[in-house]
Image (cartoon, rainbow, N blue to C red; front, side):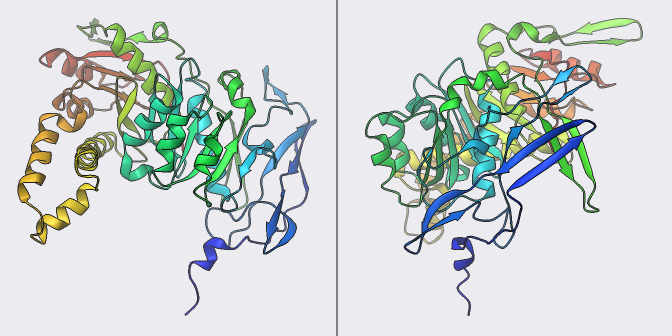
Length: 428
């Protein structure tokens, strides 16, 4: 039988050209393929990506190196501003397992979220280009710990992206948990040595992360290839929400009457709603997420119906909350504890205590804020959050049933605050 694990260790020979040119009208954009000098079985060789989304798929990384594009009054991002595409050997402090496509797109997806959160230390833990947890903190270490523990199960084997230099607290925490990639603008003395104890870990330094806020309003070309060889091209999205002052009142006009939300969000709620919206911009649609005190509680991604997405996020919150309690109390996953109880080798009272505590906290959702990337077509989606004790909601608005959604917030006991973003944040 073939060694199935070998496929994941093999660097695929790829045949993409060293240079790629895209011409849009009279404008020419020139891209250069990114490769690195590495040691492969004792021999120095030049290689690009390990493979694409799956072993066996050829893939290449290209950096924009020449050309300027301006269309319809919009000037797109110019050469010389590379982040992930500009990675050279000096920035790959430890190659670990040679990076593949998903490792680098996870870093990019994390940067796409953190570019809106540069005012404070923040970290995003990415899995398959979606966040498992995002958090602000008093320091890099605090942010990393909070983001990782927001969903410890999904974070395992993830990509940790930090917007500040990795400090000793962060390095010591990550040393004790399995992750595939760590990316940051810098590393404090001794931190790389701590992290390098995991020989397979990719340790990445991207100095331009300290200028990441500049990318929040920069437009880039977003391509989607079709199975027939065609391409859809669009502008990248830019958020209209920068501060709490950018939110719109939740109002709906019905039969000549304007109905508004009875309660306005408090300062702490607004801070969380802005934070949650910044994360929503980087989550696959349909998505609904819950945040509390600068950390994600649960993230529902990629669902076909919005109420279903909210329900899945709630289910995840309960599961992850129970696991976190179990891990912190017994240093083992909740599922492992459950198996031991089923086998009769552990007291069922320990599981019951965790379940009771999780239910009382509503999976950590009590007192949280709810954010949706699209409007609620019915009130059932917000009712899911209201039943779990959310205190404030942010959503685009614009549904023909906005009045029903606002009434759901006003009927809640106590009333739930709601604001509109005036902008959808779909990402596919």
